[in-house]
Length: 83
Image (cartoon, rainbow, N blue to C red; front, side, top):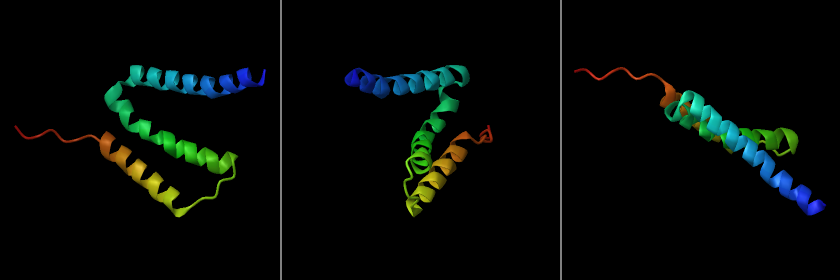
């Protein structure tokens, strides 16, 4: 019983997460969805801080800022090149 529960806990959340992300890519397109893939570690570490009581370190803030700056850079509209 314990191994089957462990197997379910290991696979079900991952399958649901990948299915949800793939559905999002299908809805908005790969070009718009790709930068947000990098938010997964941000949410993972934020949940570890909130749920598991992990200690907040300076590098968390640096990592969050770099990921958000990268997403902003990748998603902002670019001016068309002059002809």
